[in-house]
Image 1 (cartoon, rainbow, N blue to C red):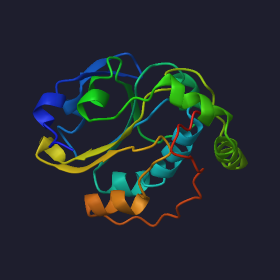
Image 2: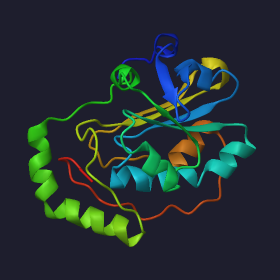
Image 3: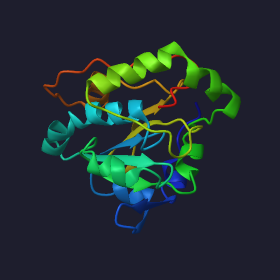
Image 4: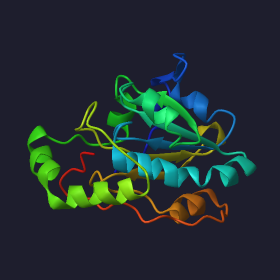
Length: 200
């Protein structure tokens, strides 16, 4: 993966939950930030991952670190927010420019079909459902996501994680290590996805 040019991607414009336009770099101007890029707000596994990352919010806040979730479209944002899956601020990258610049790949429609009908996806959905987390098929099913952690003022990228498959996520320990902080949290059992596409 090529080195991330923070000055270049920093001028990308996001829309806040309240509809305000902000530049990405404003999110790291005054404090370090953990940027969690969701595949979709309706994605069941994304919701589970958001809830897991949110376990770190008290430790992040105590260390002056901001937690931000970014989605590729507005579809499902209201339901996601009302569901309480994520404890950070939410933004939308309507042009998906950050997703492109950070190398978050897109899948093809053909790769979705077998996965949507497969046993592994049903199993993943059952595990998330057992934890009370539902999903839907609203929005862009083809986008993948990842994470970016940036120091205060944008001086350094501490972590750049790109999903290889839609079911990928980072262990919470990797996040705290990148930030050199400690957090007393218990990771949950994540839903499993195969190498096709976890559509829910």
